[in-house]
Image (cartoon, rainbow, N blue to C red; front, side):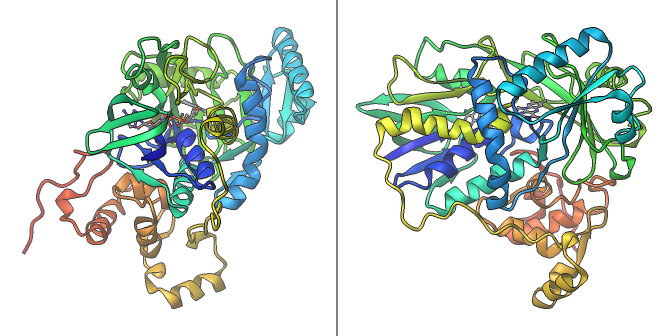
Length: 477
Ligand SMILES: Cc1cc2nc3c(=O)[nH]c(=O)nc-3n(C[C@H](O)[C@H](O)[C@H](O)COP(=O)(O)OP(=O)(O)OC[C@H]3O[C@@H](n4cnc5c(N)ncnc54)[C@H](O)[C@@H]3O)c2cc1C
């Protein structure tokens, strides 16, 4: 019997799995997808918000501030990217300036570093800032990360410490047992003492498997983005408009850890929790609204668009609680923004408030909480590169020309624990296909490498989820 089964391998579930794997308990992490982090964790603004925005007295405010403070050290341990680019919140006119004072007051009370800068000074740092901007709140400790890299790293650590990860396992039913639960997936049955529901936009459905009194309602809220080419070079800081009740944090410009720029998101409620495609209306809203804070944004340098779904709730706060009529069933639900920034603190909160009351948590001897980061050839010095190629010549065989990714790096990411099993899985881990040509040149080569490494026929290689086979037939001589 498992002590804990976590449903959902996004940032919430993987962060919790990593922290729990430090203890001498039996853990399983399941996800319906064939990879870690294919939900909201894969499609967001990637910002470690410092915690100035959530309202006083909310769980969001408490966990955002704590979570954000943990990230830099966490990313160091996990060998993940963390870039403190800073954020400008740009006010246009007196009314918005007054709102900046409210945010600054919150930041001060929460001990979050900030300063005000006048608009001309801000424009010297960010020449694309619009002349409409009259005052700027600079939250200079705000950082950006690569969210799915962190989730994958957390899952790797959990597996290294003995946790089981079952992908392609969709939770279809949950039965109550004496002192626990039976989680039934399309593939297996897992008995456990405690269930953590970290299923993102599907969390309401999962909770509904054990109670008729779920207590929250999730409506997916879509956010769409443009990704601009690296040399579009739009901004150095994250540029926010002043947030509003109706549209949340608004349309932003975000410099990513790898030097692209994200422009987005919009905020539109949708009915279907699988509906994460972009739309003409959504992207048109993004185009129209970025001009509030920035001028001449080169959207023609877009190399891709994407969308993510926020699990927006009627509660207006994270819902992290044990069901009143189902002891040992804990919801980590309605984890919308700033859920990424809050994730380390969400994990601590769940362990401290629920799991430690139910299970005896003894530290596991030999548990390792960090990992050896994957080799990134493009970031090595020429000497380090030749050293690596001497040991493994495939590190010298470039597969992705845009991002300079070698065959050796692709093979590594397939062979690691929770390794890539699709073209998108490889792209998430080592970036072939993330560059200007978006895989036009390297994708067939990645298909070949995946087929060889996984021991499957090229027609079985998936672009992304099950059923997304790329080739229907291979012409063999
Ligand atoms: C547009 C947008 C912008 C955002 N920007 C930011 C930001 O800049 N900073 C920030 O802090 N936060 C941001 N967020 C919020 C952040 O992305 C989320 O809070 C976070 O990713 C939630 O992680 P999660 O693990 O709870 O959910 P998810 O990542 O959605 O993971 C849930 C997992 O559950 C799995 N699952 C669902 N049903 C089942 C089932 N039946 N069986 C098994 N598995 C199942 C799914 O496959 C999925 O992998 C943003 C979100 C969006 C959408």
